[in-house]
Length: 281
Image (cartoon, rainbow, N blue to C red; front, top):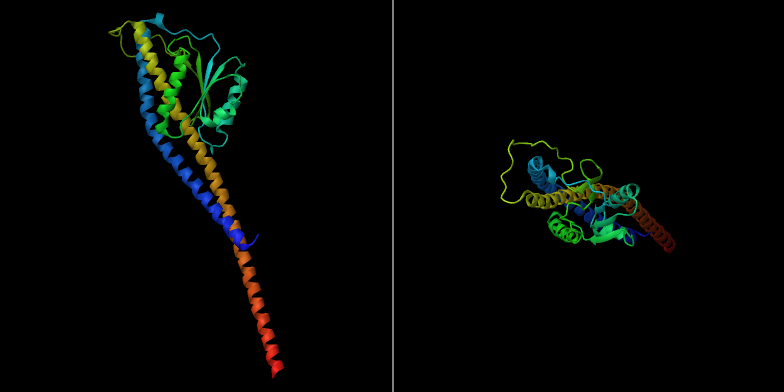
């Protein structure tokens, strides 16, 4: 490789490094934004669960029954790449736990491309690359669930996503809801004063709960994705730094060889000039 070719290669590697470093910085900023949003979202979900617990404590006949049908599996994958084995781990967690009778809803372009041709795939949805796109993703998801009568408590919905705190795949039931809520009132000893029938009130609580939980899960998944993207890109940037150092050293060696050759030519020409001068004398 000539020095000119080496310099062109170095320029391309430096440009790639700048792009990857910028992507890593963006992933870090998204993680910070998601951390702030998650705190408020968790408080919202907790408030809804406490409200549902109060209602079900005084109206146990409304408690949703455990599902007996094949589950609908919702997978939160990545919309973009550069996040290592993010989607691979989701698919690995899916295969040993289900028998193939379930239907799948996949969120995220990169994940959906991996499931292309899978007979279980019911709907492939665009995911969110940044926090501001989550609302659009969940609106599309809500329309899909509405097609499947998501408001009915009989729907069996499970969600697979990556948790940034546990650093693992979470497989949790979402519908029927409130399966872990006990029968004892959490705060008050008297029935809640309702303006609508209890069944209608519970249906509205479930609707709010589902949307709030999906927001929390989408935030967690996107945070885990960005954390893995930072790790993946950090490794790539370190590799490029090492490669740039090696190539820069190679460039210096080539330049030294060129200088040595130039000196040798100068000395040779000087010797020839001296010989010719002596001959003339």
